[in-house]
Image 1 (spheres, rainbow, N blue to C red):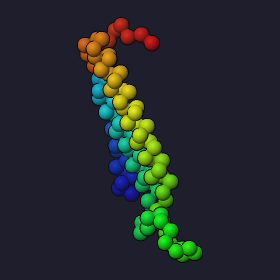
Image 2 (cartoon, rainbow, N blue to C red):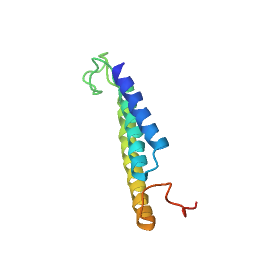
Image 3 (cartoon, rainbow, N blue to C red):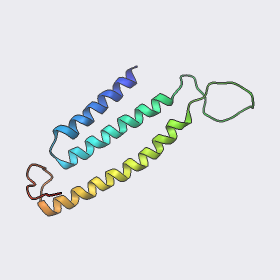
Image 4 (spheres, helix red, strand yellow):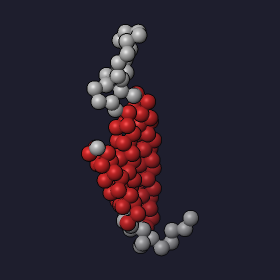
Length: 112
């Protein structure tokens, strides 16, 4: 139960940083924390206490295996998250070159 609480705390910290902070770099770090918390939760859902790796040893033998599907989903999510983080950092660098600051409140001319 404690690892699940750690995931919730990490998710709360990430969401707080995304919502409350005005610095683009801090917002990117908050998004990464949120992503890692969700990935950790998904991996923990697939874990079974005393489970073996999902490799077939003998046909017909019934044993408890760890679920491999959440691990595969998290690996895909890590790659997507890395690309998203790289895009956020690239956009932050372009904003800094144009406006000279990472603070969103100081960027007045930014229009969508």
